[in-house]
Structures are given as structure tokens and as C-alpha cells.
Length: 395
Image 1: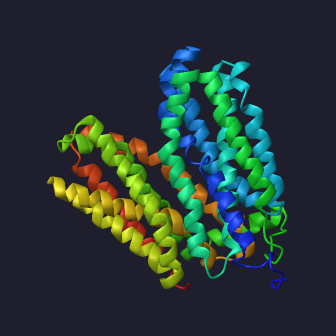
Image 2: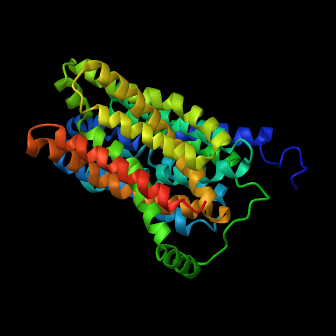
Image 3: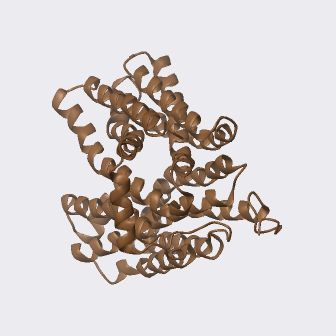
């Protein structure tokens, strides 16, 4: 089968799969994490309080992380193409929904479906694309996570522009329609390669597998390690802009400085993928976490040059961890459980995504300063390095 010029690892079709996956990735994290942009326009358009909208968006994040993780685990035995097409249909179906519903219940349903659809696409694309590669797996994974990083960078201002120029309902219709089209394209192109084994286990067998997996010490440690590998950024995001302004930057400059972390991370997503192809995903992943830890430690230093270096190192660390955790997991666990493994660890990331932002905000509010917040962020990174190193020591 591998002699087929199309159906073989690292082929031109493999790169087509990766490219289409990267485009779909733009619309995964970018929309759910733009929820801060939604508050004002939705409050004004539907007359719903910010507190109630916060509940709606919390449910969206729950379905995005936890719900899609469960789909990844228990939907692993279904054809990936079929699941992606269902996500495309669901996304297209809710695109005009704001024209027919304006209640808090209706919005909750819309955003719950939105979170589940885009989260499931993320889990599937992130687990399928690496299966098409052997020698260039790190570079290919870097490519799809460049799409992920671009979404985090460009979609918030795109949503803001759409709401301002054409209104909430029409803006939602236009952007969700574009999302559905990219997911449809992914459903057509992004299937598992024919040589890749796929899990055919029943629900009972999957539950038994999860029980066995969770009973191992290395899994529990790695579960914590992957969670903390992202928790540090979730903590940082809660107070970074205010910290930068406290250090003397203007509000616009502070926002720009925080945006530069994402900009540096886009560059490092490709670079870290190439590095992983040379030194291995484990070493490259741990090196990325070390970069992040050093950058966070520099935040204790109030000097502006230290802040500039911190932003660069944190961006390098963010891009590397976001890109390499999938290849890392694929090297530790059986490839035939690809979607299930990504789903399980997506749940770990989701738990911290719900818990860390309030913790970061509260640590600043109750201490009237940033020392404890930075310390918590640094400790999370260091413990994450230890947990990942121990959890992957037998790789």
C-alpha cells in the first residue's frame, strides 16, 4: 500500500491533508476564545445581561474542551470523514440561528453546538494529520498549528469588525458560514490513510481501556503534565495585559505586547516542528516548556528589556508546546487510538481552561499585586516540565 504514489507517508497528498487541516484549524480555537468580543454586541442586540452571557460562553468552553474530548474518545471508531461532515452540517445549521432565536436558552443551545462542533474538528484534525507523515511529522503538525495560531490572532478582530460593520446577526451568519465551508472541505480531504489502523472497540471496551489507562502512574502524571503545559498560559492570559500596563506601557502598548506573544508563537510553531523532526518530540517539547519557564521568571524583573525578552521566550514556549504535544502523545501511546488519546488529553486542557482564568484574576485582586500570580504561573510551568519528563521517560 505504501508504494502507491498518493497513498504513502509524506506524499503530496499528505501535505494537501495538512494544508486543508491548517485552514480548518483557523476556525477552531479562534472563535471560542473570542468570547470576550461577543459580550458587548450580544448584550446590546438581545438585551441579555453580561452575567447571563458569561454562563452561555462558559457552556461553550465546556463543550469545546470537555465535550469534544469525549467525542474524540468514544467517536474514535467512526470514520473521521463522517464526523467532520457532521460538524460542517452542524456549524452551517446554526449560522442563521440568531435570526430565529434571541432567548438565553436559545443562545445557550447555539453556543453549545458551536463549541462541540469546532472542538471536535480540532480533535480530529490534530489526530489525523500526523498519521499521514513519518519523516516530516513534526513539520506537518507545526503547519496545522500555525493555522490554529492564526485563528487566535486574526479571528477576534474579524469578529469585532463584523459585529461593528454588519451587526451581530449578519456577522454571525457570515463567519459561521465560512467556518462551515472550511469544515466541509476538511471532511472531504482529511480522512485517515488506508494503512493507518483505526480503533474498532465498542463503548464497553473503550471504558475498559480508559480504566486500564487511568490506573497507570505514568498516565496520571502525564495527564497532569499536559494540563499544566497549557495552564501556565491560561493563568498568564488572565492578568498579562494589566501587568504590562502596570510596568509602564500604555493600554494599547500592553495589548500589543500580549499580542506579540501570539505572533512569536506562530513563528515557533513551524520552527519547533522542524526541531522535533531532528531531536525528537520529547526533547523539543521539554525545551519549549523550559523557554516558557525562563520567560515567566523574567516577569519578576520590572525592567522593560527583561519584559521584552520575556515576551519572546514565552511566545517560543507557547508555540512549541501547542505544536508538539500531539506528536509527543502519538509516540507514547498506540497510534490506532489517535483520536481517543487526543480527546482524553483535550479534557485535561479543558479542565485547566475553566479553572485557571478565575484563579489568575483572583490572585491579582486579592493580593493587590502581581507577584503571587506570576509565582503561580511559574510553578505551574515547572511542575509541568517535571510531570511531562516523568510521564514520557519510557518513550
